Amino acid sequence: MSSAQNLPNRTLILIKDLLFQEKYSLSHSQTDLMAYLVNVPYWANTVNGYFVIATAKIMNDLPNMGEKTIEASLKRLKELGLIVSKVVRVTEWNGKPYLRGIRLTKKGREYNAKLVLPSQDKEVLRLKEELKESRKMIEKLKNGKKSEDIQEERRIEPEKDEIDDFREKVTKVFSKNQKFICNSVESWEKETIFYINSYSRLCIIKPNKTQKQLKDPQEIHHFWEWLFKNPERIGNMIDVDKTPTLEELKSKYLDKTAIIKSENWKIHDIIAKNKLVKLQIRNQKGQICLLMDNKNSKKLFSLKRCEEILLEVLG
Image 1 (cartoon, rainbow, N blue to C red):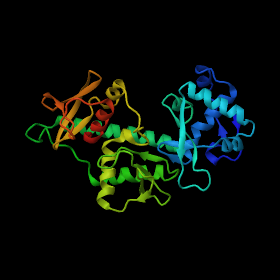
Image 2 (image 1 turned 60 degrees about the horizontal axis):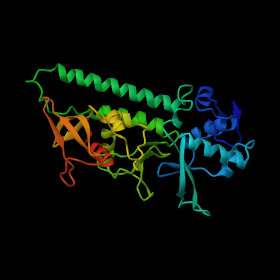
Image 3 (image 1 turned 120 degrees about the horizontal axis):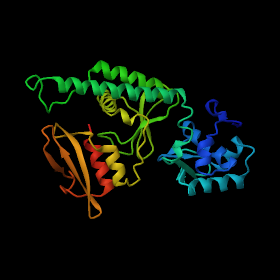
Image 4 (image 1 turned 30 degrees about the horizontal axis):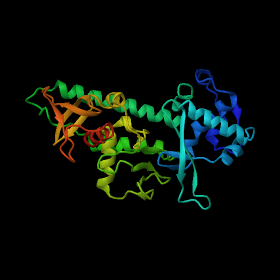
């Protein structure tokens, strides 16, 4: 393991993932830098999902690594598809407004993922599993009832006490480090980012980068109810600028519940046709139909628009 100076308490030790290093044939310097970058999201400023990190800051925290080594290592990590970077504009800082922003890719986030999880990340995973089991239990109870006792199309709504308990648990976890909870939330602009501030209050970062603490009780309740019903989104930031692949869309959304005109549907299939796709949905009776784009009533749309539609209708 490599020591580093001037890092926050949670990153004083950089853990070497030797299996990861061997998998991508990384040098020791490249591995040290990868270990450092994995921890950057826990403390660095972020702009559009990219974490602002200057070479001078890396040199200060990793004094055994020179500027040329850092730049060469960053280039190699980008070539391997472990990170992506671009120049971002930091409006709230004095001095140089344009700095490098870095984002870990899906492959990059595999670093050390199977070795050590910080306590708050373990708690997030525990919450996800707990909610997953609760949802399974609700479905079992729903399916076990006779048709005369329940309307098949009716959605089971969580009790207020359930949501309050869920809110307290998530708030406790995310108030410790102010990590982002999620973005792309129903009824908000998809770029809007949600997080918990140091006063344990729900806040947002708007697409124009202004920050705001939510005070409207209905808005706050709506967010927590939505998150309760979508526990897989806890701690999961969607890259809203990225065009997903057909395989990614199927993996993420097939068999998910969609609410369309107050009725429950399932995402049945996503079918490619002439570089566009169409969305098949099915109701509880097994009937299948196509979902139209509510903006233009079209039944064929791009992959990016397909995901936007899915995020709009998912329950």
